[in-house]
Image (cartoon, rainbow, N blue to C red; front, side, top):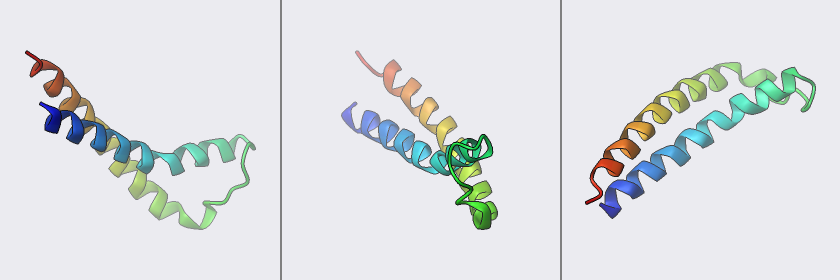
Length: 70
């Protein structure tokens, strides 16, 4: 059970890290941050796709881990 929770939380943290550049990009569009990711659009899109996929996997793993609690 502990291993399932560890994998689920680790996947969730990986998704959050992958989605951080997307959040910064959105904030830079509002003028909060300078547009520091202007030259990294392709990397940003790949990270967004990976982060979205990892988020779905993490939510599924968390649901399975919650169901395994006796």
